Length: 424
Image 1 (cartoon, rainbow, N blue to C red):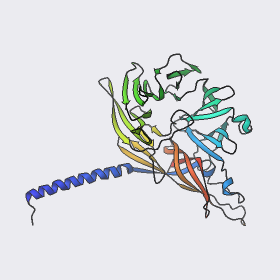
Image 2: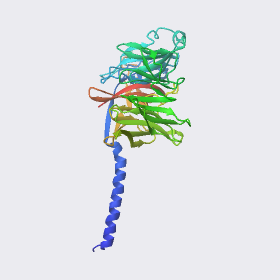
Image 3: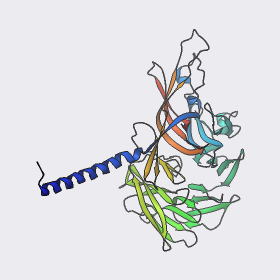
Image 4: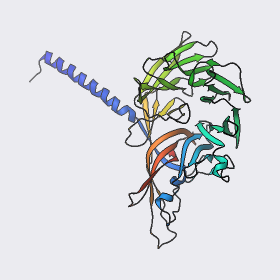
């Protein structure tokens, strides 16, 4: 039996619409899984030492249960040599900046030096009231306040020593090392971005305004500031002519923390959804120069990302998302399995970076009569992260929420720790 020509035509039209609809859905469902990259545990702090021998007399809740680590940061070398973390001891309220060798083999990472360097021997009353350590940023820079002199310091670990990039009474809300190794920061009381050379703040600001955050690439700036209605906007500015190009200007949506990609080709920033501060999206735009005018084409809006906010300072910590060349790394909320996603705007494709989520601390074999214990470390959540590349492989340096529990024991302990994963 043959089809009526009209019905046949209608059949093919409907069929083509179905296939086009299915292909769209298929693309949406599969483009996020273009490439999956598996990672193995390389090193980290105490909980992640696979070679730790457990004392059978220890109980779960005295295995370093007062220690946590936060805010990992790597140096800016192409092949990282060190990483930094803030060590917090809740039992003594003691905090240290710890510098570690970047691991190349599996096992524990080696502590190079703490800061303050004498903090391991001084008591709590001699250290903590005098040193408030805040605001670790990429490039192993951190903010410190010395309460005895009411002085702020920006310190950087470089060439095996802690160098002061800034010392003064002004609190920097946001700071950055430029491509030319010049220190820039925004000062709330002075409304602008100021340049610092040899610990001296230049008299005139580079850019004026109520600056929240900023980013710099060559002679171009992304400025995150408040408009007249106290909403957070983002503008693009070239220093040579100070022409302002709006990138994110809204009445009801606030945009924060713009970053250039490392080639300067793209920009990304986060924005809330209709003044809902519980829902954040990541916006990716491509920068083009046409007829001496800059344009900013939206390449992607990534929904419901997971933001990291360091509440003790006035700025977003540089760990919510990260550019590596023109690859954008981030996390989304409500992931069933902890992982980091990478978006490649040029190819409109995604990678998903999956670490091993469970590790076992070795059983005790020193005393054959003792009860064998196995402690299991389960990765519950990836919080803040850094992405690096070493020896041709991707590395994830992560602040994790981990759960430590004993086999056949329902008792568990959750702490924030540092783990380093390497591409398999």
